[in-house]
Image 1 (cartoon, rainbow, N blue to C red):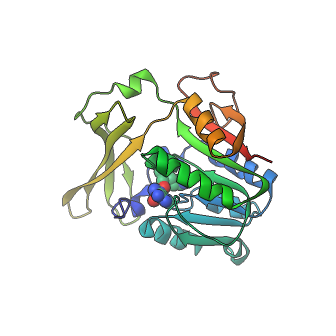
Image 2 (image 1 turned 90 degrees about the horizontal axis):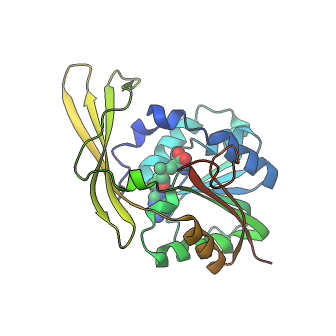
Image 3 (image 1 turned 60 degrees about the vertical axis):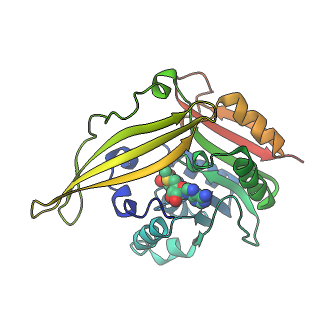
Length: 259
Ligand SMILES: C[S@@+](CC[C@H](N)C(=O)[O-])C[C@H]1O[C@@H](n2cnc3c(N)ncnc32)[C@H](O)[C@@H]1O
């Protein structure tokens, strides 16, 4: 099931996604690693397209055909030399075979948190490892769970984000609601709720429902070590502040394939 199907066309217009301060970090890491780079869960190309613009050859892998379709439409607006640097593949990050090796694999903006079980997380890391050159790197981008965020009330809609308008005139307001939480398996059952007002006044509500696994810093280190990676950095932010410098910040883990 493509859980992003209904919201793929909205994604690039959501203000909190448009203004995420992560793009510069991922472009710099990709340039430093050099071509070819693999982005896993590349979505609409929010990070992938600026990376290709920066001169890096990049393959984007995503399980959602609708997110990939949005990415293809965005790529059509790019010059031919940028498009030529991009390959898009529909696939599952746990099991894919690209017949190619990469200098760096990135998972910007939480794709890894869609993997609920340890077996799935290890399958994904093993698949990534097989696709890296000797000494290649992986970057996981996870939120650092704050106690406040974990104890948000269940079933309560948040106040809305800033309204945005689609090119066809639809006005969209987005809210968040947690509908369940399993504290034993570290899984939140989340909803992003999009209230849409069409230019003719008609209204509709789209609900993007998904599960999000939360991780802790030392768990991430152990998981990467178990999967055959050496952890090089754990940052708390895209400005490369070390983990702990900001709270809650991110768990931005940079690791290298063990020799
Ligand atoms: C929050 S979006 C992030 C998109 C993009 N990286 C960005 O920074 O805007 C998460 C993406 O992960 C993809 N995804 C989720 N589960 C996946 C899986 N098992 N294999 C591949 N992609 C997956 C979704 O389709 C979605 O495009």
